[in-house]
Every structure is written in C-alpha cells, then in structure tokens.
Length: 202
Image 1 (cartoon, rainbow, N blue to C red):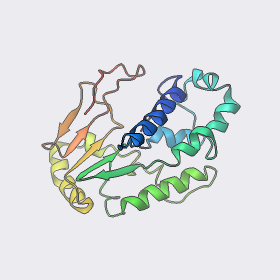
Image 2: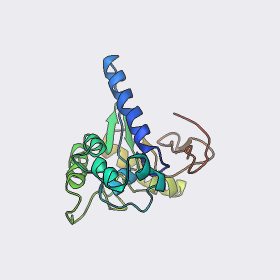
Image 3: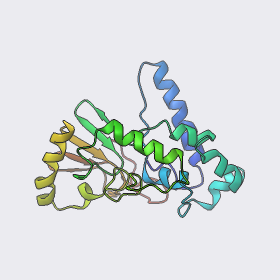
C-alpha cells in the first residue's frame, strides 16, 4: 500500500507493478499489490498529499482525476486489489488488523473496502476505509507497548488462524522491525525520497 502520494511518479510505479503482475503470472507466480490508506484517499478525492508534479505527469488535474476514478486506468486496477491477504500462516496488511476487526472474515473486509472505493461520493456509515481501527489506518501493532501487544495480539492472530502479521503504514527508519518474537513485522522503512529511509525488503 501507499504507492501514491510519495512523489510525482506514482503512475510509473503502478505501471511497473502491473508489468510485474503479468510477468509473475506468466512464470507461474503472483505479485500481490495491497491497498493502503493513500490509495483510498486519492480514490475518494482526498488529495491533501498528492504531489504537485503528479497531476502534471498525468496530463493535468482532470486527466489524473479520470485515471484515478473507479472506471479509470489506475482506479479500475486498484479496485481489483485487496486490503488484506493471508498466505499460509501470515497476514499481510497495510495498517493492521485490530482487535475490533479481527472477527470479520478477510474476504468481507476486502469486499467492503472495494465497495466503498467504487462509490466515492457515498457517505458510508461505519466506513472501513476511514476507520482509525480499520486495516488501512490502524497503527496499534506499531505503536502499542510490548506489554500491550503481548496481551492483545495473540487473541487476534488466533481469530485469524495466523502466526504473524506483516504491516506497513508506520515508518521504521532504522530498517525492518520485528516485535513479539516475529509476531509483528514492520516493513515500511520509508525508503521513498519523501522519507529518505534506507532501502530494505523482507
């Protein structure tokens, strides 16, 4: 997540990821692109963090708006993506699955987020994409104390039938960070120019 709002070249990044998806499929593999809060913000016309050069790179504000719309070049591609996936015993999610969301089946979370993004003008009650405890915004597993995580996370992972959660969203400039013996892995190292973090991957 958070492909967008990190500079003027988001379109090039999305084009690269689309190309990688095709390459992986031809090779019998898969690239999973997950949604972050910034994808949701842009698709819902919240442009507070859009780089000034972004619209220029896409041919102007109107062109960028069309491309990011639910039926646009990039918006329609993003609408195919999940907010959270589980591969074997690992949950991958942008912000985190909070205790408040742990009982909701992951496919329902993804379907609801896609539904909200597909109708950006609708005022949703109990919005999944704007909820600070929702998977796109939750920072608890990055910011809670070790004691709080030790108390709360095992129950969440048990509900998800998982052993660990890999999260982004909260920058760890010192590199990839593991918490609670690897039960939480923070992989957003802020390596874009916007943050100046170190290049790293898990």
